[in-house]
Length: 78
Image 1 (cartoon, rainbow, N blue to C red):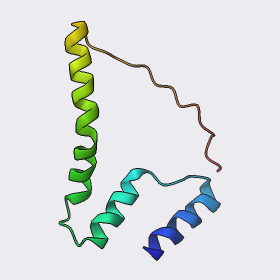
Image 2: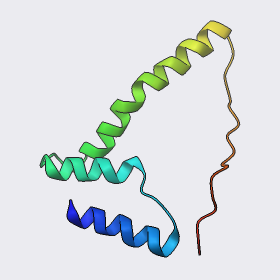
Image 3: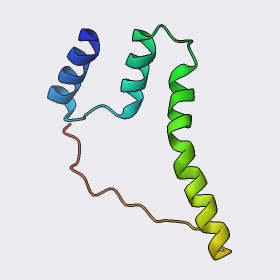
Image 4: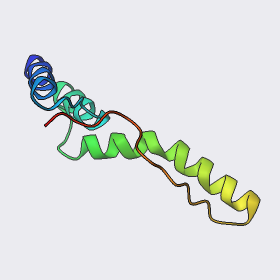
């Protein structure tokens, strides 16, 4: 876990970027000595509630919902 922390610090200092949930899932899987595919499975498991919520909403409105997302956060340092 110390390596992940140092990696996050270095990347933030150099590029101004913070880690995503993907890194946390990889670290969690490593600590738990989980199978290689565990981070992807944990990510998907966490998204299932959202996917089901979208499906239920789309079914209720009888139309596809296509949200338009525009990133408004800070630009990464280069």
